[in-house]
Image 1: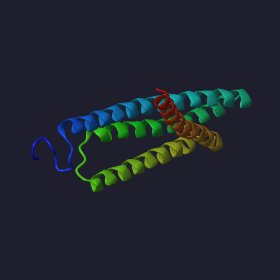
Image 2: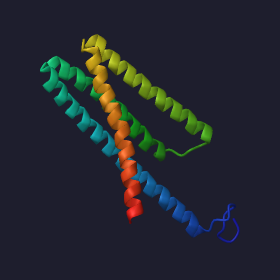
Image 3: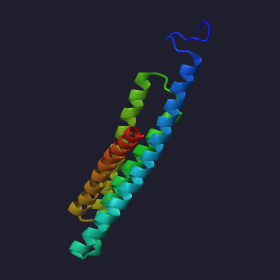
Length: 158
């Protein structure tokens, strides 16, 4: 570096601004991930209430709750791994890509084993369990899209 300018032509104040923006984005992402999981859990509880009111059997409601719980577990694992990834230094893009694949495989395995355990070991109704899981996953996708949309609208409105 020559005279407070790095190799890309950025001055120290410009570098500091980039770091502050990254820290701000990281904080917003962690907050959004937490609210997405909370929203997902609330949607699952509403789905359990609807399922119980439709079928009036506790076994059906427990199956929906279990499937939704697996979905909330998936969302919580996603949020945890996303927040943990920002704490580790990136050695290389290849290393980050390997971690991303490992975390995706970890979540897939956790979901597969949990759903299999619910259906086989706990003898829960398979369609109700999958219905609860699908409701939770739909809430995960919708909540992320809505929170991103809300953030864009509030940013443009300021």
